[in-house]
Length: 143
Image 1: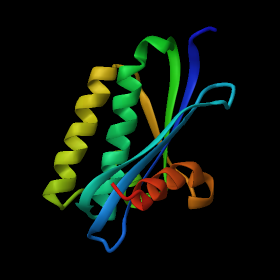
Image 2: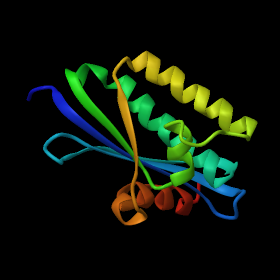
Image 3: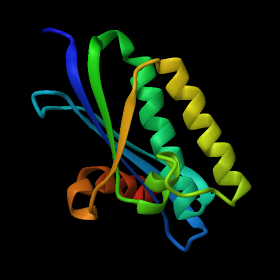
Image 4: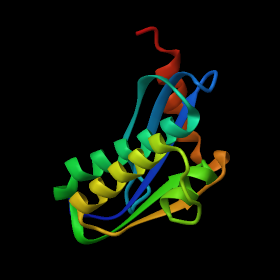
């Protein structure tokens, strides 16, 4: 099997109560549209926006940990269903909240470690169902 030419990373974060019990979900497809990873994880009590950022960071961490599987000219696309967080990451919106600013700093650090340009796009919830599924599975788990 050759190296991955295109990586599509779908991320989602959610909090029940906002703030409330929160989780992240990440769903990753390759250039053949095959699922290569998918996971969800509880992150404690948080807000929706913090959970969205932490999901992006988890997707970046997966990318960094699996960098040897990527071709040198890989195209990496992240898809988020939070227009606010996507617009903040792409620089369209300013960030007033210091916690979100710190999370964006972590995003930038991980991007630098990966060393490959990453594109971020907003998608509808409909197109982000798999990542959302992992959020809800994590939130529904007892432990």
